[in-house]
Length: 328
Image (cartoon, rainbow, N blue to C red; front, side, top):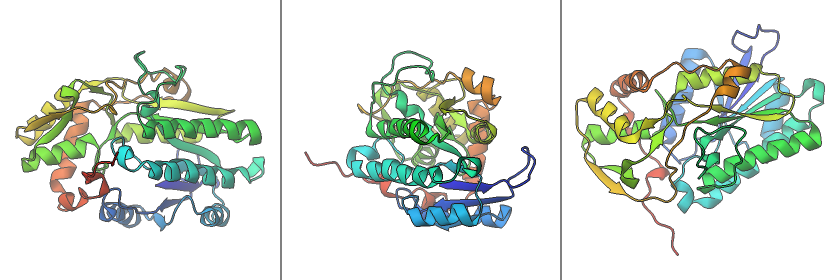
């Protein structure tokens, strides 16, 4: 979902005067889940979500102009690593074509009224880099999958638009975000549901992986700080927890909180990154970003939400579940 905000004359620590979401509600994961999120935003916060695509230039232009948008937070993308193995062109359209469509509409504004631009990148851009922790100053030359490559291209496109049009931007390299209302294709939701219903849990590469799981509240704080950051160029920040967790430790955390044991089946995947670990010194220094949520506390919040959500099994559907293999 992309978020368009009109700040108006608000104080920087208050909510924007107007916020509009834009989502195409596609079926990568359950459209019912996405619409339930949109309904919650409307019912609890009075926020509207427009049903449409970032690739629709006329729609984007109309929203930007009619609502006098001052900040664009672009979180919409085709996500997922393994899905990119069977649906590569979805990443080309959604992550590249739509990204360029959006920045084209933003750059058309005169500089004095041009919306501030923040977009989601990913820790996947680091690919097969061996230096740990990952730093924004590291060379990014070893992509491990098409998803990560497409997000790095976003950063390169943003840099090009800064060079050509002086379009300043902030890219946020998110590290394994989890929490209530989180995506059902991510480990927190996938593993919790599998353990709950007794379904074999697929663990890749013998579980010898570590992830810098980052709780949603900490990520939101980083996004808000990035909206207030006065970038002079096209810059990027890591937003992670700075505390990688062994995958099997993560699974044991879920087992303990559910009171159930996981049935594990191991598989091999060459698309998976062995470890993600965010160096957050830059974000801490320039954004004041300080994640505060340890994995046991964050997963407690997630599982509490999960257990009380009666639609959780419906929300688990979507194309990402497809077992189709690409023909060779």
